[in-house]
Length: 191
Image (cartoon, rainbow, N blue to C red; front, side, top):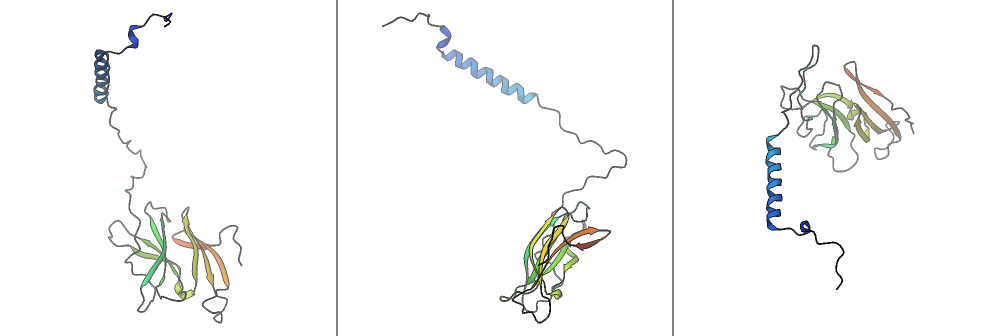
């Protein structure tokens, strides 16, 4: 057996006292760090002319809303919904695409905007973007950047069968001057 040229070092072998000293040091650091906590956060007071902070409000739920659509004995079916602040008041609105749950065929859609005031418990319809009387079907429905967009499928005349819409229109609604204004999205092409 060959002897090592380097003498054996004492610190390469741990003893129980070293483990106890290490554990005590770690416990001391943890205990000391729990005493030294950062100061609690304080909210800055708004300056003159600043608007007060708004409280978060849940978007209106369209289930159970009395939509202005005539379905006879059939129930109203909410097909799609999206929520966001459309009018810039800090409270979310919900846009719902609804139709009668007829079981067969393609009943026309209605598109409604729902809101709920701070003192109201139930949401209410505040705008009709698409009236079911116009015999339109809504596809590619979305809400983004405070705008509602949809593809509308319709009919060029009353002679066109309900199964086969022959008109396609792209629509965009935005809140301007106290009302929803409809336009055609940029880059839209009619078929």
